[in-house]
Length: 362
Picture 1 (cartoon, rainbow, N blue to C red):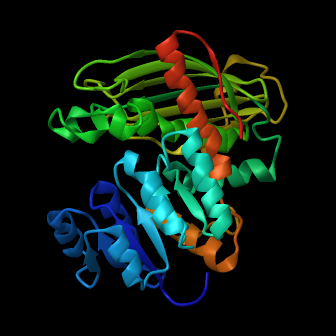
Picture 2 (spheres, rainbow, N blue to C red; picture 1 turned 30 degrees about the vertical axis):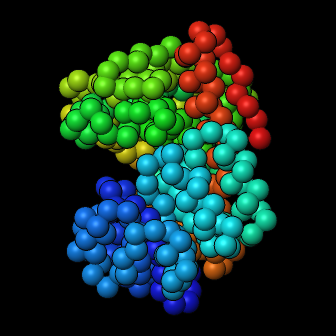
């Protein structure tokens, strides 16, 4: 990374926008917030309290017309993502769009076409890919294909009691027309995408069952369980709930391959997720029972990735800068992210129709 401090405009003023501000404040020599945009005066005021030098705008058109920034970060309700991203991309401005980048496969294709036409990079904000331990794990798998080997099965869990965040029945996350769905597109999307990133394989078929309890409306699922098939033949399960009363942890992930396994399990009550750990048999069969549980260790930073920060939002920002300024290979693109969105579409359709559904491919 080289050159002057990269200038970001942030669209939205909620918790994720604040997380991105914190990511930049932690690396002031790399990135800075020069503008914030939100239709609510209170939202602009709250963000500018953290970055008082940033200019405030109530509309994206006014923000773009004023200029003075190098890229935008969109951290708004999901149903706004496509229109807002298009406003920047069609003008040749790179943009980081927090997950889900958009809510349907047709919208992914439309945004990808606009990005290709203008040359403006779109970074889908799949934050789990930018947790440093996740990047270290991917690097370890690339360096030693026999460490875990081809994935045979996996299990993921995503739990949250959304009432602790919405504090009322009118929050946009509860409405499928605004969020694009329920717990899967807003929460389980993290783990679903992480399976793809670490396995190197895409989803091809799913079968799901869901609950649709109030205060979720307009087809937003409050909970879902599913089986998922990967293109390499691997099979796995998903369990997700936004109505998880007193759940002991937020997320859990186990990926089992032919030669080893990957795990990310919370160690303490109340944690979202735990450290990324890998254990490998390196092709050897266990000789005694305890052998199958030996060898677990947390991933370590490989050469070249030691400087990744503990803040994944800061890592997202630096990655976008590297792609835009240095031509670095993207960790994720719209074409790559397509299968994650397609899987979620298929899961919702499967739950509605009560049958297994093939996942649309790019």
